[in-house]
Length: 586
Figure 1 (cartoon, rainbow, N blue to C red):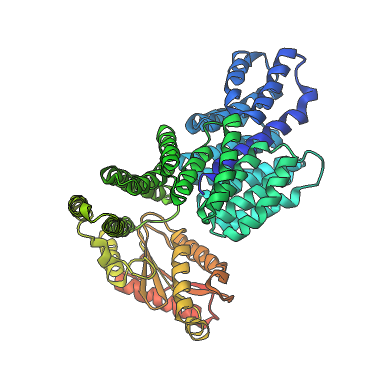
Figure 2: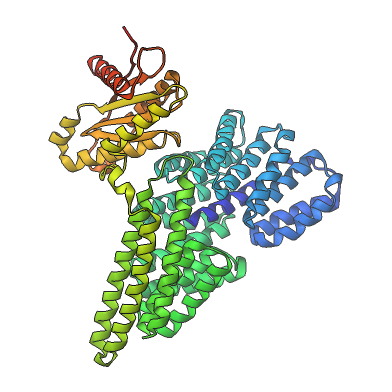
């Protein structure tokens, strides 16, 4: 469902385009050609965004003849069009080159949205957040509700990219609250569409399905034809994913016809074809399954849509297996394995700005992939034995070849990862550094230091009560959630470790006492804000922190600093918990 973000980028683009023109049409230069080109751009954006590029090129040719307002609209349309065509680097550079010239908050938030969306697509999430924050700061200065919705949409897009779905849903609710019910308002369509998207992304499929009918009906009755089409595509895919193959096939075929009229290059058309291939496969029509499977695989390949390519490759492998073409099935399985690794690498890159990713994450993913492929091989073997015993030797040969390939790949992976060295350094529950690795790392950091080094210790308050009241499974959930939360606040050079039970530590090389205190406060507040409802119980969380720094406090070694941080931690406990204390020499 990650490609849903593309749909709502386009939806926001439509909203921006329509309102930009309607607000300032009276101030535009009295030039019939310019006005005609601007109107045509909006119409093409609403009907088929791919056609707008030609009209924008015509406006670029007469850019010097435009008024300031017309030129701002032109830049906004150009940025949005570059985004639709996947040219996000040029999109960001264009907005950066003109943003300082635009002082009107109404237009600034629209340009900042294009910048935020562009940085998000480029994987530069810190910059995307900075652009989003600039927009949020302008909210009090905005009167127009549609401009406010652009700010909220920018926040939703960035938060979805960071998998912060609960926070994104809050912004979607705020967008829905902006809807005044006025005729031709697109806000409700946008807000409901976002709610559908976010609920699918967070795994709340039942909730997404309950919103879908109202969202589609709302978008059909307004100007959201493209959004309605994309929502229908999601509904079709969900039907097939849920096993309703006959109903899903009929709806998907009809929706594909609509895509051919409005947006032939959409990734949603490709996803629909892949879903159709699975539906035909599960209903026994292998000819149609192969037709749609090949179409979706080729479209995904042409568009370099790695995530879709992986899924279509797995679907084609299943189709070829059902047809008895085992060599082709193996080739598609191998392609899927390669693509799956690319998807994992992309996800690691996305998260790099906000959390440290451990080496063994990829190792574990590779192991799971190997086990999955071996299970599929065994399933193929059993199926072939049932259908035709005469193919036994062919099956054995195929299995041997695949196992040799997989064994070679596993050996290469083990060599590249230094025989999973990270397994001995990581706590199995929280994925933080274990005590041994933390102490080893910290001792080395103290020996090699050229400046201050800080140590933060924190301990979950009343953790035993959680285990006793809600059970150890809930206690484990708390430890994992706290670890994930703290990791998002660390620098790349910091090391986070579980020292035992509910006690954790952070080693901060080249860090002043003030910086360590700030980090401890951020982590304390973040822990207190954790929503425990997903654990199945509702209760409050807090932690007590102790901070110590090698500086003028008489501390010389890691052991002394660790002991000092421990004393500061116990002072926090004594002062009522849920606070931070810094060690100071008496």
